[in-house]
Length: 307
Image 1: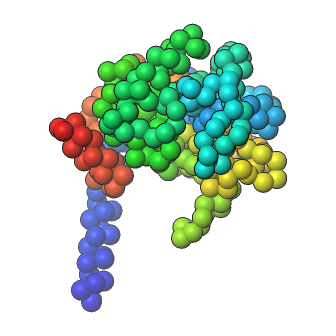
Image 2: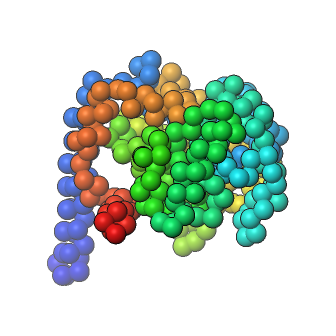
Image 3: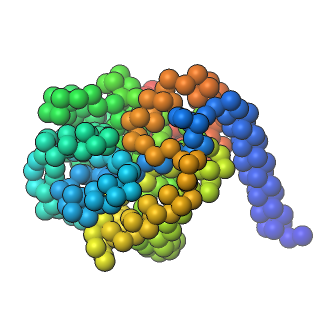
């Protein structure tokens, strides 16, 4: 065997061993755990920004299939036209207080998506994460306990420095994975729901994405998108079409059946916070050796915290 092939095989076997050991650990931790009403896995869907066009192109589908959604709202954009040159959603109108609260009355949830969507840094975290929460709670007259990182995940580590003390129970990122009961609630991943992701790693829309894995590990799928549109997405790597969204919901109902708990993110976080088995699983979670993103972000967070 060539040295390169040997090294490749060794790395593969080592990685497989790590994954197997962690899977076993998670299986042990999950013994006795059940989701609400005995459900086996969970599905949530989030919409960043909260554009008004959701009322035309997405919310009717939510009502048709009885699926609650979740809005990640930028505090200073509530009830305004989004002015963010360079953004695919520049010029879109954002829901106002009454529109947001009308959806909350339909079991939708809300999280803070920062004060301005400029990207969270150590220097602005107090404003973008902490003050944004307080101001949003004042506007909407309701508690806000989840922070959704704006832009890229580079703002995740700076957000971690202040989020817990500010009263957040969870942070949502954009990370293509199925969450499990031992996932740190400050490191929740969301699966990009998109029509097509560009090269070099081309991917096409898959209405069943994440469902099989979630059903096998008792996991939690959180979809991420912005505002589906008919026939063509606003941004193919950040959104699906309305037709694809309906396919996603149909697949969820078909595959999930009575086994899936369909819920807003806030409700799921509250459940995990209060379940003793989930609490123990998070406390004893294995190191994320199979998770390059988590390793890098934890290192960044440690450096920032020490600095």
